[in-house]
Image 1 (cartoon, rainbow, N blue to C red):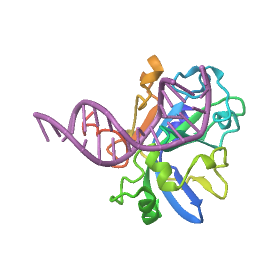
Image 2 (cartoon, chains in turn purple, brown, yellow):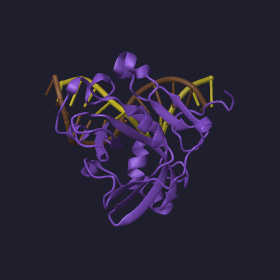
Image 3 (cartoon, rainbow, N blue to C red):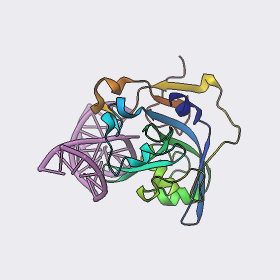
Image 4 (spheres, rainbow, N blue to C red):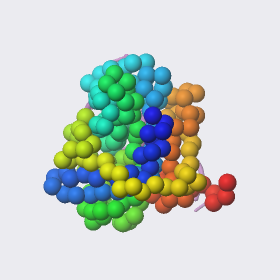
Length: 191
DNA sequence: CAGTGGATCGTCT
DNA sequence: GACGATCCACTGG
């Protein structure tokens, strides 16, 4: 599942919602490791209507509302019964820039899908789109063969999961180094 | 810049 | 009745 989170970097996520097309390349992800992960909504085997899509087959979406404002988009990654998911945190816009700019009311053409809340908004994704196939008419996850070179891929603790105790420190976040569309602070150029 | 607090509501206790 | 897998505006230095 960590591997899937890493492999999702460079993949293309596109939507045709309300008949309008938008697409971007994934540059930041976070893995949520199911029932043993305090940061996961499925921690302890919690199983509610909201979380149910995570218990479904991989290759579908799990979308939920956060802070009453933001819709966060996840990729469900395992077989039925195992609630693993990967939060898609940021995209580099590829197509439909103007549409995404309208949706997010952003002045910027870049960085309008930087952060999970903005990403869902830019793509038009809402909780109405939870538990959908990622090869369906509304949402598609594509591989065009592009890969970020290994030295550009970085890993670190997840964001906004302070409530998760020790699990808040797990290095389950993957991102492209020095990429302008990655959320959070910039890391120094060196290493 | 960094730090802070408000927005806003579905979901679960 | 409390609380977010967030974002942005606003403050002060």
